[in-house]
Length: 373
Image (cartoon, rainbow, N blue to C red; front, side, top):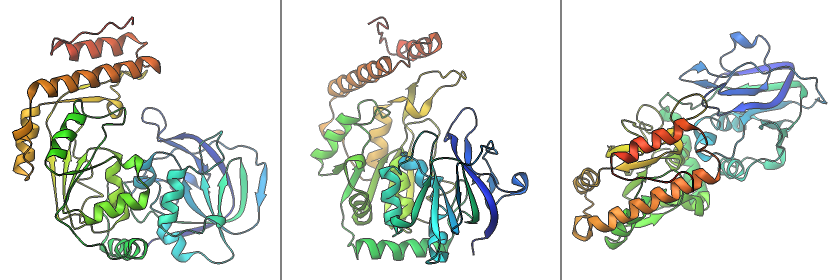
């Protein structure tokens, strides 16, 4: 069972911070009564609140109709599922004809992002009953259900069963095939250097390549359901599995971050037949933030190709027969130039620390770049 709470006369404000990695992670939404003592109502990770109390703003609107708080919405696919979709199922199951559902959004925005709309549609939410809190608003009656799944906790069997049923409703009965699918990040700024060449080798072996950002949510999820082996370039696409309950596939994850086992201790638990991580990262090209830390989520991963290919072969994927070292190096060099150019264009290489960090890494490989260009 998921706990629920009911409140009267609650002020809800737009988000000042949302998925902020370096200052306040999460600040905005409802200013719950006795905020510091709340747990169920607040945003939690590992059963512990990780949000900051929102700053009170004079309300511009008052809503008398009873509402249920679903949480914030964001255009970040991974965090929308991993952090912010855990209240949807219990809220919809317990909602009444008379209530609306409310979502919070970053200050200055007023429209639900398409990513969030797709996820709400997956849960068969009536979008006409979902309202965005885009300005400070007082709600006379507001209910909130606990997160049925949240970061750093493993999903419960009854919730996985619910998602299995939901998947059958949305996709029908999908038959398993012996297909191998590679879920690539080669077209995203932060990826593995040389990833497009790895794709070429996979295509030669008859492996299906997908770039999830180019597919509808249903097409992504049906692809995952049908494949016998799913190979992911580590990243947000993995969170799509959280919508599926038990995937019954073998999952292999090629790391982009050293010693990082995404999902091992929480959302992948019980969902897949098996999970194997390939940690072949030798270095990462990363900018240094104003807080003095490497921004690894936007980094370019440099990998040990020998380690990667050996590990893939152990998982039943042999890319050695067509591999050419010169072609791999050429692909890596091309990706480094593209990554650097992009960071220059968006102004991320203006600080000395970033330049020094990147030159330190590239110096190991006798690779230099003119940052004045």
